[in-house]
Structures are given as structure tokens and as C-alpha cells.
Image 1 (cartoon, rainbow, N blue to C red):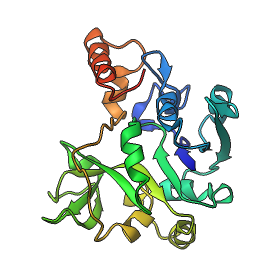
Image 2: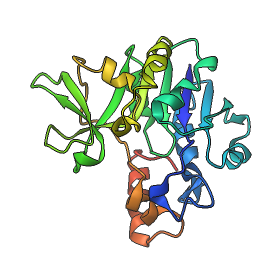
Image 3: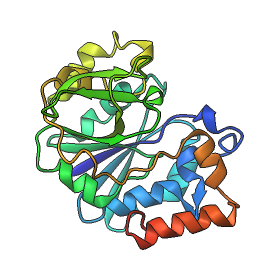
Length: 243
């Protein structure tokens, strides 16, 4: 199996930390963030297509062509036109079911493995402030009614966290939709809106996803406060985060 990892963006929300390096290379406990997700993929995939853009030469210098037995392919997204457009760049390399994941969040191997039982799937996680995310609205049977990007009204708290399983024919959907993707939805693949309605939500409370963005990342990157390091160590001890 192959995975597509998206690391092309500038991550302006994390300036000034990302003025000199891309967000996936920021150190968490003295280890680049992207390495944590690559570690989760060991044993699950044999190839990762890394969608690069901003400071792509630094990503290449750190990853090269192989990581712990996984082949690394660098595919450039010359213009950052949204996540759907980023996934579309991987089309020449894909001919079977594949994973897609943000390269600047943290996911657990156990959660990624849950996706592999389905033809189409997306990880979701309850969050305290749904207005910051794309949110799955579900009914009393945990079936998806709709997916709303950064809802202004309360429709639920089940966030779309940026880790998916897709089939190759989604590229034809992306090609049709890339010119019509609304500005408000640029952060998530548009085909989620096409495929999510009516799907069942499984194990909605089980994910160990961590959103490394904005103040959370700035607080924890580099020389973090001892209390933050202690909290991260607890996650590692609980096997929710690999060192």
C-alpha cells in the first residue's frame, strides 16, 4: 500500500517558527514532526508520496528516498491550491487503495489501521472548539448527515482530522471539482463532501490524534517548558505517541 503525505504548505499560523523551515521539520522532543507519522506507517505501507512545496529542498535533505524501509517519493505541488489539489498531484503514482494524511499533525498507528477495513474512510475526533475545523454532523445512528467547514452554528463536535483512505477513482472526482472548490473548503479534500453523506461513524471516541497548530505547536516546539515535556512524555508512556 501507498500513502500520500501532505507537507507543501507554508503554515503561516506558526510564524516565526516556520519562516526558516517547513512545519513538518519543527522539532518535537528533538525529533522532526514528520518522523513521528512516518514511524506510524512502518509496516503498513511500502511507499510514501510526499507532496512538497514550501522549502522542499529541506524536506528532501531530511528524508531522501527511503525511511526505515519505506520508499519516499517527492512530488511537488508548485502552487498551494488546497488539500484536494495536493492529493491530485499524487495521481501518477497511485493505482490502488491509498492513505492520505496531513504531515503536520500526529496520528497513531492503531487509528490508521482502522481505516484499512473500508473502501473509503476518514478519521474523526471530538474537539472542544468545532469552529476551527471541518465538522461531521451525525444523526442518532452515527450516520453522517453532512460535513461543514468551520461551522458558525453548533452542529456537533466531531472534527475531520486529516487522515483518509481513498480509492484511485477519486482522482476523476478531484479533476472535476478542483476548479469549483470553495475558498472556505480549501483545507480539506472536496471529495469528502461527495462521499461522506450517509456513512457510518465507527469508534468515534477512539482516536489519539494531536493537532499541532497555532499556539499549541509554538508552545511545544524547540525548548519547551518542563511541564509540557512531562505531558508529552505521559502520552509516550501511554503509547499514544511514539518517541
